[in-house]
Length: 286
Ligand SMILES: Nc1ncnc2c1ncn2[C@@H]1O[C@H](COP(=O)(O)OP(=O)(O)OP(=O)(O)O)[C@@H](O)[C@H]1O
Ligand SMILES: [Mg+2]
Image (cartoon, rainbow, N blue to C red; front, side, top):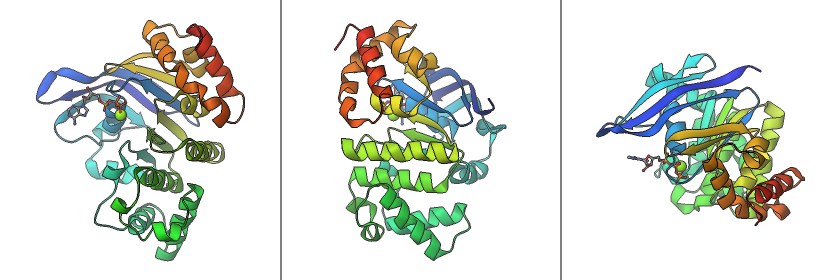
């Protein structure tokens, strides 16, 4: 299958500590119409990896290696080219939604501005789209939400606004960094279904970072496990959950298996359940 993204030897260093690698020699490939889940403990470099690929790190970091997206090495692209590419071709849903919005602008204005800078829409069409996507994100009274400033919305609401923007832009690649952490489990379920619908309808390639195995097992085909800035293991989700080769992966799966249990009720379909049972069995049960 064609590759939409090829990451080779990606390394991120902090300029004031050039001997410390925050991301160390990470390589992976993402096929078109596929979803890679990234698992790893807090501080393992998941966010750094994704932000560095899209040119979202400031000048205090040095990034080396390659991140070839649709044939273009993003690490060689000029800032303006990257800015245009973000939104139209690729979108990153940031871990901290508050940082994604300008506090001085109403949410609706930020949504319509983003839509109009990437799609040929009138102001009215952009506003209609904003209201429609907020509804799809299970946000009640979207007409009132678009009139508010970011600080007037909760973290979970802003997270859904951000996901709604990304899904409405219909990019070729979505990178979602812990996109559902601030949501209650029912909303999380609905939002995950929306991600899955987008995958099915538009064949969008995705990179999905989550601590939550239920979320990962619902959406990902393959999984990359990170530890201390390194890619420890990569494989199909069945391999990673049920037949992991690396001890670290087995440890991580074991400590998180309990978390998956709550998804038995919340997730539709038997697949997540089977993987949960498999992960639990592989680690001596829950
Ligand atoms: N702005 C920064 N300046 C210096 N070091 C940073 C900065 N942001 C992150 N780091 C360091 O980079 C490493 C990787 O952090 P990163 O945020 O990528 O982890 P993560 O896997 O996304 O963790 P989490 O699951 O908590 O989001 C950590 O050691 C962290 O301390
Ligand atoms: Mg992170």
